[in-house]
Length: 321
Image (cartoon, rainbow, N blue to C red; front, side, top):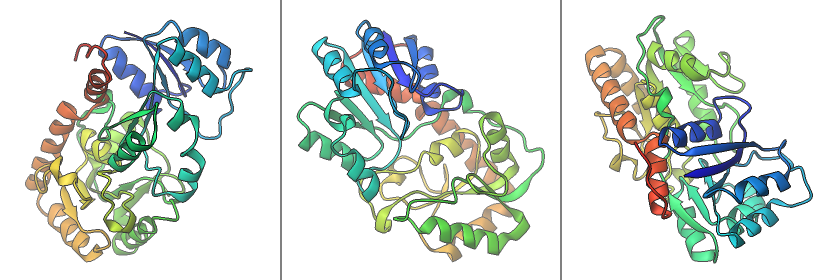
């Protein structure tokens, strides 16, 4: 299949780069169109000769050219070329984001919207005439699914932004607790964190060195029923982290407690501390869970697996795994 892909390919660790590499690993041809640099007329010209047009938009990036992206999408539909958008975050529970995007071309002019939020997929399918939606669990790039050997072990890690949506104060409370409780034994990697951003194989090494990794996932009112969880789950497990994750509704259908990861209840930091203590003091149990989680993700939850599912469901050839 020939796929025209508009997105951010300036660095090799963007979601778009990982998607494109996964599609190529499945045997498809991907033509990369750098968003913000490629004129809309050129996007249209290239995409009209493709079987599928994929657009992953970077918020705030303007488009060059005389055509709007809605005009591009409308012309592609008229030409019989399917268009698709894939997004890894929540929209509907976040007031500012939902107000901005609910009537945008993402949800009105595209043929398919792939979302990690089951409630949003249902809303699109009930309220949009031309755009159809698919729910897909979050994934990780197969090239990053690699277990590494610890070189400089430490106790507790958290990977992710410290500055988060106002609808989710749990992140701030969690990080504050971990810093106060574990002091120098705790390392925070991410925006505004002491250890900063870590990417690629360096991140795999962080997960190998951290004896336990604490997770978090946006879950409004601690009970959001959209069957949504953060992509830090497959990212951490696939890269070889030992994950202690809040109990997100429905997630245990996909990842088993004490087998692939260990769950604790949102806001119950005493419960989290007990889990941390347990897994810090039981190395064999920790390594068994780490290996099982990594194997599961590498064999089921990579973008190669997810793209194969998506292409099948939208009526295109599955390609080669």
